[in-house]
Length: 219
Length: 132
Image 1: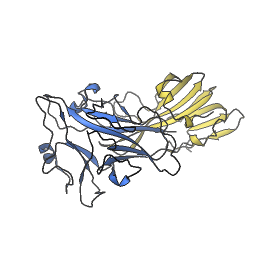
Image 2: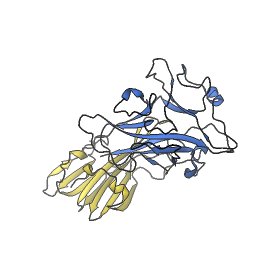
Image 3: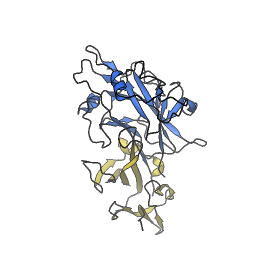
Image 4: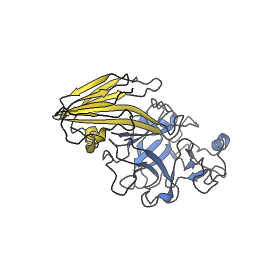
């Protein structure tokens, strides 16, 4: 039987896991919801009452720093169906880029046949990483940094690994497939933290989208 | 009528027929440790390959799910794998099921790789899914 994947984001307390405190997580409706990486401002922020426009997102974009690397300050969940709070379109993803363990969760309702992994691509064809944010064709230069936090905290000032193309993140910390669910459990979760780090004086300002993909298997 | 994904002939000449859906293959319904003589495994064009003479067999479907982009949320089954273990080697047949635009591998392409049993990829497989 296939295994179902639910992608979770923590919007309350990134020190608690989904099994103990599921109410701290929002399950992404992947058909409608999406992540917004932004510096944020008075308009583009936590708890917006409308979906941000392209102009608003451009105004709130992260600026390239001429002297130091710049980590994108915020990741917002654009929650199209207002799963929490009734009227809010956006929720701040708690712990993104910080020394926090339970930020992005990948929940499986059964065993997997091999280790699930997270990938980043230009688009849904999954065959190129030519965008600036993904290293402009050199995956090792990707601005997207990822760290598996399934087993432990990532550590202060964690560097992470560059995520793009064949540079993937093993979500079970290299420990292989997920075993059958324990008695009484209905799901098991793997965790990661992410951040986007823009090199100092990067010479190509851009507003880009990229595709995060979770690859998984079943028997 | 749609063909089953696989048909297994055990060494006692009994049979097990898999399901037709990649989402519910029936693989884990095979009695564990029951010796397998051969497996007929369906290809996307409805032909079959036959694996014979291995000690153990393993199958899996590989899917990806995008968090954003034009196919966000859709479960895309990209590859199917059937593997056979003999001595310390695992012969892995990867069958392409989904063909993206400009993809290197076309639907029905089979990539064969032989792994040592101690290879990280093999060791990372779910031990409960081996049959035979």
